Amino acid sequence: MRPPLTRRTFIAQAVAAAAALPLVQRPGVTRTRLILLGTAGGPTPKKTRAAPSQVIVAGDRAYVVDCGNGVARQLVLAGIPLVSIRHVFITHHHSDHSADYGTLLLLAWGDALKTRVDTWGPPPLARITSLFFEMSRPDLAIRERDEGRPPLEPLVHPHEVRRGGRLLHDDHITVQCCLVDHPPLPIALAYRFDAPDRSIVISGDTRRSANLIALAKNADVLVHEALYVARAPGTEGSALRRHVLASHTPVEDVGRIATEAGVKMLVLSHFVPGETPLVTDDEWLAGAREHYAGPIVVGRDLLEI
Ligand SMILES: [Zn+2]
Ligand SMILES: [Zn+2]
Image (tube, rainbow, N blue to C red; front, side, top):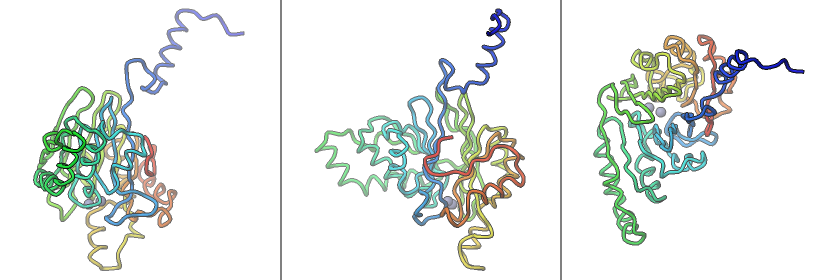
């Protein structure tokens, strides 16, 4: 038989239970969700992983980071309504991160998007946005007339980001960014999202970056790109191999970065090479584990963290 519950033990148990509960189960607090939409690195389509993208969902709003090919479909597969997209962040203008930037907006609009979307990324984001609308004019005009949709262009507000700092603060989330090192691109960005229940940092593409380590300081989750040097793509001495080695982060260094930043969880993504059989999950894990003792997740498409 259980001992009688005194007021003191009841309170102690209640406090312990509340501490153990995920925030989602605490009254009045909604858990901020992170879903990996695509986890391959590199411009070519892969059989086993989609192109890089992730979504953070806070309240009823979706904050999409990067728009690799197929991002709209990946959002649908993840069960995130396209009409919930409120902000889109582009880390840099490599096609694996940006190929479907305009397409995502177009398809969300085709799916009844009627509300404002702010987009963020390096220049020339505003020109890319307006050229996409120009290219899509025949479809936009027909759907406006034929289906009675509001014009898409006035809904989309591009912001060109040239330096690190705070980008926005709404009732769900604060977003900051920093410049990272991804030569030869003139500007590549990492983003940090601080919600009441957790903080999430997305590295984008970068070699080891002191700015990123500062941005990720004590974050709950760091999603970092990963390179397996021994199986890097391209032949020895080729331009492709040189770019990959100069512009990305070996998985062992990703572990070091996670330790230096003091993050509570490391999520590996943007795998180079990106096909699953080339490097196993255990190999990715072993590389990151060399210098990081905390929890490590080897990312896969549609994984929620
Ligand atoms: Zn990339
Ligand atoms: Zn890149």
